[in-house]
Length: 298
Image (cartoon, rainbow, N blue to C red):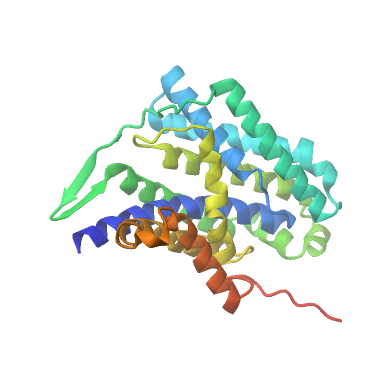
């Protein structure tokens, strides 16, 4: 039972990071209708900026995190304005390919500036653990769950209780009606990219905390979180959270139970299990658990 609870805490922690990355995907998709394949590059760039602020500039960890998120918000807004704004109205496939090219550019920038070796973030909890009875959890996991929970609560408040958040939702649901009511689509797109980039930075920081460190491989988190986004529904922020938690728990449970007890499934079954869950759900609900079914009139 203690092993199960420890795996559950680790799974929720990993799922919280997946939820943040999925929210980043969904934010841009709802605003622009495009799946941003550059998300992984934004994740690793944000973590690298946090390393620079924390280690080289010797800022307190909390300030380094906030500074990295702010810088990434500016980067995201700039990328949307310079690279993607000229593509408004172009085929979705073209914009998607541009985002894939942007991922390659971001990875090259990161490797050129910070190199390929893992870099520690200097977080205050490191490899510390907390024991309650028979349960031992990593302090980094507990902080990850808490930080992700706070951010998700702030996002819920923003989208449901602020004028700018409601404007973003209105633009995503009906851009023409929003424009008729004086809501500029360009500003909404820029804000969506800024938000998505800041959240991606936090996800990278949380994933690299503890003893793991940050390197270029961190960009793969976007592809690992992809099943969470599809599972929850491409246009559902709430679904992204649920999907992230389900995928994180599935991955950790598979690694904890299937890998040692069913070696015939392969050593990497924990990496395959989330995609199997995604496929099973899509066979029943093609638009994900909370996605909106597309209605076409013919």
